Amino acid sequence: MAGDLVRLSKFLSLVLRHEPQRIGLSLDPQGWVAVDELLAAAAQAGTPLTREELERVVVTNDKKRFAFSPDGSRIRASQGHSVEVELGLPPTVPPERLFHGTATRFVDSIRAEGLRAQSRQHVHLSPDEETAVKVGQRHGKPVVLAVRAAAMHGARHAFYLSDNGVWLTAAVPPGYLEFPG
Ligand code: HQG
Image (tube, rainbow, N blue to C red; front, side):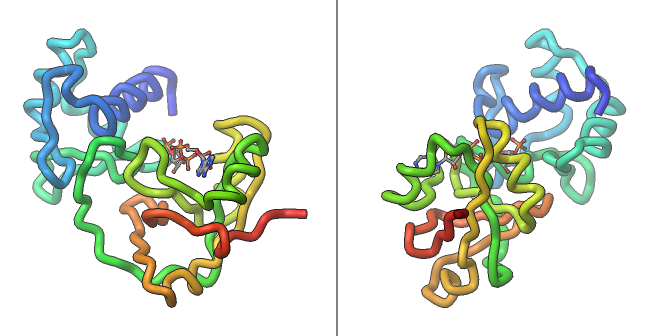
């Protein structure tokens, strides 16, 4: 993504996942906001953007973080919220294993407590190890944990697949985690 698109993507992540009230917006229960309202509020808050620029951010975004409603009148973040939203994703059967990228400094705590959603609504899991390494690098020296997802699902833990390919679950108890080495 080009620099100004990255800046707009970060701005949209902030307002569509974490702090809509910061620019006077509120999300509906499923996380949607009207595009017209978003553009007006963004301009008012000093980040003017056009409908075309918004479309460019959505289409070119490296992780497909945002999606328009089918009629194009609303927009939301596909996952990653800290504000409470009900994305309406159907429970989905996960593959045998999923992966979680984290930083080495969190490992002792994760061994003891398992994975917790922390400030977000869900624990985020990746379908492959390369993606998990990138997620872990955001926090420090990366380490990839494997999650025995099929076994968890067999024990009635619900899994959801976001519109942009991130697996979501409420928490992962330590017994379902495999640590490297
Ligand atoms: C860690 C990005 C100690 C967890 C990515 C992680 C993702 C614990 C951190 C999305 C713990 C939370 C989410 C425990 C979990 N003790 N540490 N018991 N349980 N942790 O950013 O998964 O670019 O909220 O390992 O691609 O890193 O924003 O979660 O390191 O999909 O679109 O607590 O964010 O996407 O960090 O990343 P985060 P995450 P975007």
